[in-house]
Length: 304
Ligand SMILES: Nc1ncnc2c1ncn2[C@@H]1O[C@H](COP(=O)(O)OP(=O)(O)OP(=O)(O)O)[C@@H](O)[C@H]1O
Ligand SMILES: [Mg+2]
Image 1 (cartoon, helix red, strand yellow):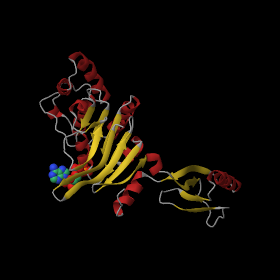
Image 2 (cartoon, helix red, strand yellow):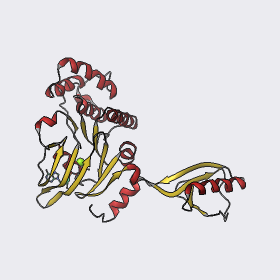
Image 3 (cartoon, rainbow, N blue to C red):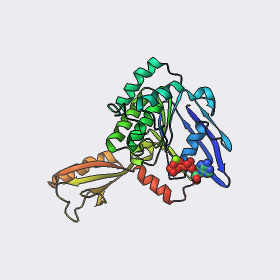
């Protein structure tokens, strides 16, 4: 296990920022921690990094109790709202952080141009951080986290302030890191992004875990399909063993099938074609993380 957390609590006076959280992250996972503002996401990351001491419970990182100094070299961290020293240029900042991690200069000289290119900062080598845009600072922060080739990455809102093109680049970069065996732990509010990126997610609510599982499990099929015909189906059309209803997505109709889905979908297609209805779209309907998250945010959401 890369991360284990058992009944972890963090109290700030009367406030329980974490009220007894347990979770595990396996090697090579892209793990997403979701939750509303103040849910305790940053607190959890800071405990895992040894920056904040827990009130109760235990946690390990790469098999060692959190706070073990030797483990820090294996870890990259992008804090939320980070402040990079303004007088540095991109390359000088990366040299500085690389040197702090004990990287020899010749390795830094290879790694820095690679990271600047990867994060779309090439060509701005002479610019000081004070002249960077918000998204550029975020990209450089990510380069800093990746600099010493860590085995584990902790990223607190990595795409904050980054434009859509940059977000995609960052997603691809993280998937590439995962292919190289790196474990990635991401805090985020961006549900769509987490859904596209992560293998496993956990949702924190007021310091308690309300849900965890694989993205595939949490967004599994609802047993209905979304369909569109070239022309809307005539009112009152009878379908054998299935029901069509209006849908909130424009142009689409929701199709409810009897339990045996695969056979029923064939029957549906036969019925549609025998009525000369031209099918233009057919998609299995899945719940989204957003649906689930909003449902949990509304509800009491019992702790696990
Ligand atoms: N040093 C501190 N002193 C007092 N309270 C704190 C401290 N750090 C965090 N908290 C409180 O702990 C709770 C959890 O904060 P945390 O920063 O972990 O939330 P978060 O899930 O990261 O939120 P966000 O999405 O806004 O970043 C909040 O209520 C916050 O006010
Ligand atoms: Mg936070």
